[in-house]
Structure formats: C-alpha cells, structure tokens
Image 1 (cartoon, chains in turn orange, brown):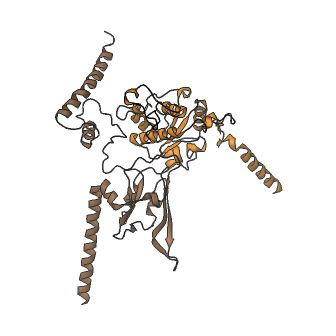
Image 2: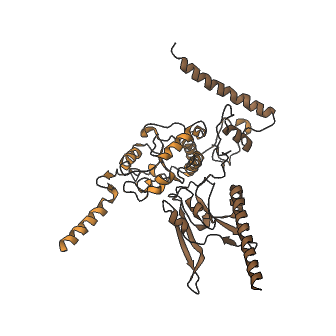
Image 3: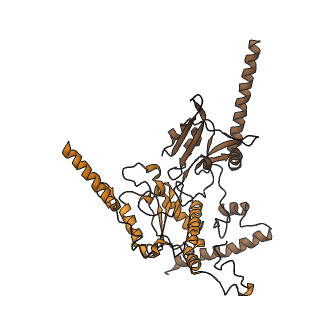
Length: 214
Length: 207
C-alpha cells in the first residue's frame, strides 16, 4: 500500500479525474495531512543539534518531507526532537515544553544520549534517556546520527503516523483527560519525578522506622 | 545606496537557480544521469558542482567513505555446509576497552567438561549507548567485530542488538570495506604461510 497517495487503493478512479477526486477515509486524510507537515521544535541540546541543523540545510533539505518549519515556540510545534544529552537541570524545561505542545505531538530521541544516556549514562548530572519522562516515538541510534540517519528516523516516524487512527490515539481518549500531561519533575538536591512521590515517601518512612528501632 | 547587499545576495541565489537547469541540460546532452547515480552524487558532493546539490536521501544517498563507522557488527565466515563460523572468541577485550561500556558478552562452557569454549553464547550491544568510536574493532585480535555502514536503524523501541542481529557474513564486510578486508586477508595468509614453514623446518630438523 502506498501511503503517500491519499486515495484508497481499492477504488478505481478514472485517470482523467484523479487530479480532482479522491476517495478516502477521515483517518487517512488526517494522517496524510499530519505526516506531511511535522513541524519540529527549534531546540538543540548538544552535538546532535549540529547534525539536526545540517539536516535542515540545502544539502539534505528536510523541507522535502514538510519538516522545514522549525518553530521557536512549542505551541506551534508537532515534534519534540530531543537532540543531545539531557541534563537533570534541563529535564523540567523539556517536560514543560512537551506539555505546552498541542496534540498530536511526537517525541524523537535523537542520538545515544537522548535515547539511553550514551557515554554519560552514569553521570551524576545526566538523565539516562528522555524516555524516563516522555513517551518516545522513535529512537535514532548513533553518536551523533548523520543527517541521513536522522532523515531515516523521520521517515520511520511518518510510517508510524500513517498507522495511527483517531479511535486509539491517546490524545483523543475522552475517558482520560490529560492523558498527555507529564508532571514536571522537580530539581532539588536530585531530580525528583512527581509520579514517584508515593514510592519515595514510603521509602523515607521505612528508613525513619528503621532508624527509630535502631 | 541601501539594499545593495540584499540584491547581491539574491543575485547569487538567482545564479544558482539557473545553473541547476543549465547543468541538468549539459548532463543530459552528455548522456549522463545527474540524479540517483553514484557519479551524479559524487559530482554534486565535489567542489566543482554548480546549482542544486541536495542529496535526495531516500532515493539516493551519499557515497560513504570506507572508514565511515556506525554501530559495530560481528563477522562470521560461511562454511561450505552452510554453518556459521563465528570469529569472536568471547575474550572480552572489546567489552573492556569500550568507553561507554555498551557491550555484554555471555561466555559459553562445554556442557560435558564444564570448561569454557571460545565462542559466545550471546553478545549484546546497546546501540543507544554505543558512541561509534570504533575501539572494539581496533582492539579485536581476531578481526571479529567491525564497524558497520548501515545507518538506517531507527526504531520504535530501545535498540539493544543481540547476536542474531549483530552477526553478518564476511562477504558483507568485504563489500563495505574492500581495502581493509584485502589487507587483513593478506596478513592472515602470510601468518599461515609462516606457521607452515616453521612446522616444516621443525619436521625436517627432527628427522
């Protein structure tokens, strides 16, 4: 199935009318529009950002995929391209940017650092992968991935968008309001994830009782 | 006069725009293909190029130099009966030198004697930690681990490659790095010849 064509393959439209008529489903129309205009957030973190910039230049030209408009504000962006090492100090800002993006929104972890921590995975100030906080759609390995590897990842993202339907997308789930909201982590002495507060409180209480008995 | 610089800049763009077409026509007149061919990409990557030089990635790709490196892979020799002769002996040197420590090797033992045998049961590389430095292939004494050229490995899950995914035949290695392969093959043959000569000399001495 050629997803780049809007029309459904099973309908036979006469050739002289093909430029004017398309028979399609709402999902397909929606995905076709979405995949052809994935606007990334203009946001770079480390050396991977240099490759991301190179991918946007005339040499590789991401405009061929409708991704040329790097938006400087999350409110106009569809794609959070996490390009580089995610430090603990930066995570609250990244999560806040993600929360500010309108749905549908996608996250791509570009490079080793953003996907798994890379060479800094055991660093005191580095988060080993942005997937600990945000739902990542595509992981692009490489250190850094070349512009061509980045574009290969973007094509993979487009393939993922093609398979989505409005019925199962988490951002259209009416039962779960705020299905996309990620609580902003708090940077204190260390980075704390609000989703783990209960766990942390239980651990602290267990430690306190242990000290009392000792 | 204000705006001179803008006009100058725009004239460069205008020149480039028309050069794309003149260049296309000249290539057609010479009966060559400027797009989607190795020759065309080479010319468009060179300093002599004129006009458009975009690499239309999924349709055509840049010519990678031989020493380009991405995630490592394990080399195996194809035996005549179809079995795989894995060159890796699970010595663990690659795992020791790996700066970000992304290699895990599970060593194997002979089930009867319980002694270790030189073949890995499993070999994992966390591609999301690997920094493509190439130390593993530089240090490997058996030429068993080599850096790949394949960069289209983006996925929807974390990329932890197991042995099944890492193993690639030596013919593939020859196709991506012909010069390196020829050099290593020559060195191996020389070593084997020296060993055979030494043994022959030893046999002659004992007689």
